[in-house]
Image (cartoon, rainbow, N blue to C red; front, side, top):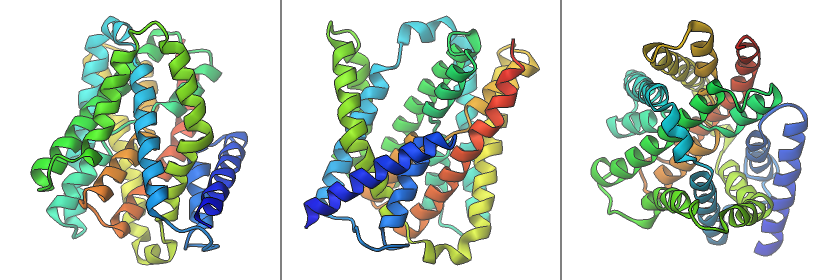
Length: 321
């Protein structure tokens, strides 16, 4: 029966992802929603199991491995000043703002600090799609955004690893190290002669098997009925997720000497949290840093920011020559 449920999760998650893409949203949003619908919140026909958890962990590994393999360090060096300032400011502003907001709303110090780590991350997949759509992927702005996002994610991965060990009080386990190890391996594997074929194979395997299980399983863990009294905090977190990353990255872009139009476009391009924030949230759950209720709040805020990001990106990107 568990294999049937996993097959159902994969098929429905892929379908929802494709529908979301057709509607102009991120594929990840559709995949998360499929898990919510199949899980206890709506239909209650698929439940988290140890096998689903294992396959999700493999999905995280492949996702991070691919991210590393797609990170062109040589290209990043061309715009190192701008991308570094954007990444640093894009991390600092949410990393400071979220703990303050969470503490004011009554959350524990540990959860508040972890929220700062989660919402410091950036997901580049949606930004890539919008850049490609507007034929700005090969422009300096596109290269700067990609470079800054990679640096941003490296900082976030290191931060969550250190957090889980020192603040979380846990051992340096596989759960917390896995994404960072995979990302580093991906960067190293770029140098091998068959890296392109390997990346394509891993991406195919991930897209049709492991990624749907990973993102779908996150949706399975969300109980919407438990969030009824959390709507105000979720809206606050969502708004904060958007403005902190936008203005943090914008400040970094301005400090690097970029003009206002480009800086605003870069700020919008760094808003989406998507995959990376979800991976970090999952690490928090696995490391017992946060509970299911808090993780659900994180995930809903991540979904909202991921939906809003391309809406802001498109008009701002179009202004850049």
